[in-house]
Image (cartoon, rainbow, N blue to C red; front, side):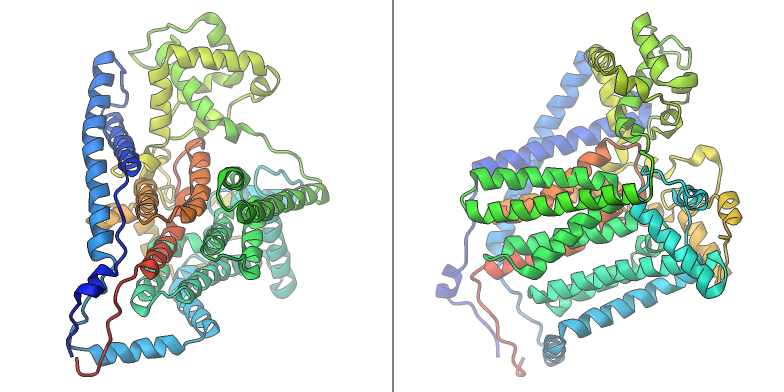
Length: 593
């Protein structure tokens, strides 16, 4: 039996009329993309951009011309797709129709609990070899600092106290059960792996509940199991992994709240839990959430559904305040000290250090023109101690940041702000270059600097995928490497340390941080094309998180990981939601073929 569309069926499809405002939005995005592409490529090649009138006009003109054409072309292509291809189910092939139908029937009968359990088991089995190879886990990043706090009993909230307490509880449990801390660290890593795997499995179950078919879920299940970064990050002892889980819960539950006319209690609860978790496990989680809170407030004030948006705003505000309250309680219970806030000053640190290197007369670079005034030099020297501006690295603020005196920014705030603004007006090109170079990995799909930020230290395990331990501190605490699969451990170490993902043709871009911002912007544009503005609201949480990254110290996998992990689920959910809204014909599947 063959299927043919009738004229009446063709007319029943939704048509999305073109919007001039949307063409302008796509053109602006195209300009931004091309501007970042041109400037980041120039910085990668030359190390500096001198923003002469000629260069600026040339770059802006090319960005406007090329970006406008490209943006409008993408917009037209998207309209063509949703109006002519997207609403049409494809004619199934004659061969294998019965088998496909039977598989779909089996899939349809699977309960949510069965799907969740099966998905979780498969994910854990896929990640388990890496866990055993790196046992008791990858204790890289800040884990050694947190272990040091646990051993000393002196907590500092520079690293999330909730996460430090989780590590402490696992270490003590290991001592109780097995008589050693190493088992406890292994227990923590496995529980973290289990938590992240459970969130992924819940997301897959969530997609099925919203109508995603077997052909859609299989690829995302495979991605969850075999995307290499999931192997490394699920067993890395860092706050960012727990944060990723809560970030996903919050993003998808908020999306569901946008899809239903009436607020579902389960979605509201998960949104609340995700909000509190985000705030507890990353400091910038609360700042990212504040951006979402602002947009919800604007929707409540200016949107058509005041009552609906008002309820969501109250829910979001309740979650936010609850997270802050729990955070303060942990602070008091542990008698923690307030950490230095220099992380928040990462970008000004980079900009002032660059100004000193290029204009301070310190003879680091031959192009240093020594045009800073003595008062400007004096403030920078008070702010950046030990002439650490000489260690300026355009891609990471840490070499300079660790020598900053934040007293200047906190208690000489008027002088600091006036000097900063004066230098911004005096050297706008240098300040812009500092921003572009520090964030090259987030803005430029072709960037490779993110993979070699620590290469000067000549130490294994400090690439984009970090696996290096601070073994002295950890060994003193009873934590040591105890790989169960040394051969696999060596293989995974080589893959990470040699940045092997850069050698994969085409698909390597799905591993690089510079592609994800533009993928989210394309998704945002798609939602605008199909007039699903309500679903754009959860993406403001992604926007808020990106803003914190742009102001951060560098580009790292653990920072961008929540964005990477969330995209497949968000993309499939929104694509399926749009498809459900299309009044397209439904094709019967018959055994006759």
